[in-house]
Length: 356
Image (cartoon, rainbow, N blue to C red):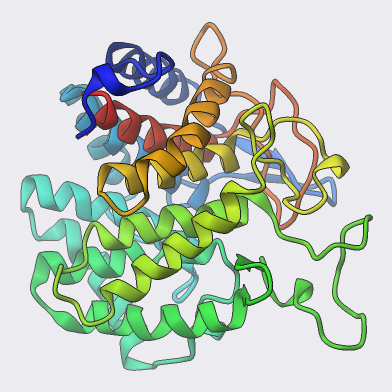
């Protein structure tokens, strides 16, 4: 760990823990019930939906950072309400996000029933294998499902889950990673087709969505946390992580935020806290684990953390979160939703470790 005396003043362990408690407590007391689709229809969030699943990865981070059993108990209560089940769509990564918390709870409590639904869902995919670009065709999916596959191998000793994830992962990466920028397209609608049929930003740039790339940065951290040190492809994940961070850090705003559109930041110039949280999580994790050069990345992390602190309202509500989407959109100070708090909590856990 980095000695606290060498850290910039913006980093303070007690403050980081206080913010973790504030944000987690507020979101648990005020869970998002619904959001409005672009069509105007209301979507009501289910317990197993990804919005809630990401939040509970943050609740588990809050438990680890504070050692307060109320956060562990909150996650158990949520999992019980879900009957420890995955979402309704068999192969859909968003419906597997909840598995990450179920498996972290299993790791803490060692009750086999906590793993059963995850095993059933993943075995279904293993028994009918498809390419990663078909199952994990959008970049968000790399956060939602792969860490749980790695966790399941770690917890069962069965290499098949990590092996399958590894195959799916690299096919998805080959499909979505842009070799010119080292950034990830959200999905095939944004990949140049040679005919000009892809979606572009108003300034003509390729569309690289801030939160979409943030999902990938954070995902690699969470996969590596559960991948054996001697895994044959571990260095490939590290190399991808470093390459992506090198691309991302150049696109940070002077105020510490990343914008919703990475190559056309003026299209939506307001702060975007969910992307910034995910990038901060990755950079703090990378520094803590000796993967990112401290001197190179600490200035970016310092600016990001200072920016994120301004997004926490006095009552603990996390603001400036881009609401559900598949591309860059507007954000406002009052925009709050569960996954944005979860992303912040992942970042804050790593910041707390940094200055412990």
